[in-house]
Image (spheres, rainbow, N blue to C red):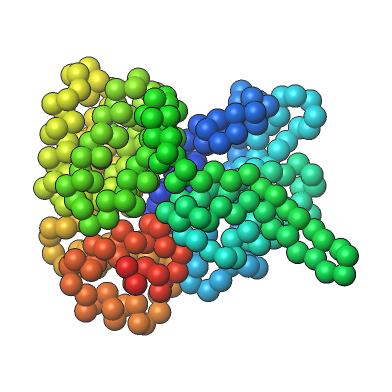
Length: 318
């Protein structure tokens, strides 16, 4: 399970990368997976990445990215540095940002760098794979591997058949975006994905990682969420539920979105403010005023939008 920071859990995708990193690489690049020496520990370089990327961080905006140091086993090099960036909305600056971060990492680590873009948006036409610039006969082109999650809508059976926990993460991500505002449909899919995680005999820590991601993104009214739990208990074997109890771990994950639909308005305001601060840092006065005057339904909608939007303006346009 990802380690909590002082300010609470960061974006669920960052946790998913940390908790399920080998599975992400296996899913996105099987050839690279086979070249990595998984018997040796891999390391997330948070401080190093912040030093490299902070110059391009826009005010009020944070990106979901990771830098991971892995050991190689084929003798060509001792270490490889993998830069992973998650982008959940179309952004014209994204390819350039991938390039800028890559060359800054190149300046620090040399040629032992590879990048991976994971695109979680719902725009089928947006398929960025390179960045190019030049003039007067001089041109530079940077190509990067890209995992477009939406493409798997057409390969849904592949995800369903996969034993890779990251396949379930991708399915939960896609159905979360597609069921916004439709609680009944979301509950159906949430139960399906929780059942998959329990019944596929994965290691307990992997089941917990998948549960954590699903619980965070697939937000439901509390009563309906409890009904999902009851249905889950009915639909799986007793020994499987003993293997991992969702009831036990619900209260243990810091940053869990509580009081999702029911409960006091003040509690929802507090949760939303916390989520906004974790992702965007200090909040301007207009945001605090908007939250203070909002209806409960707006607070819930905005809390969900925090997971996928990259600016405060985008969150409150939802």
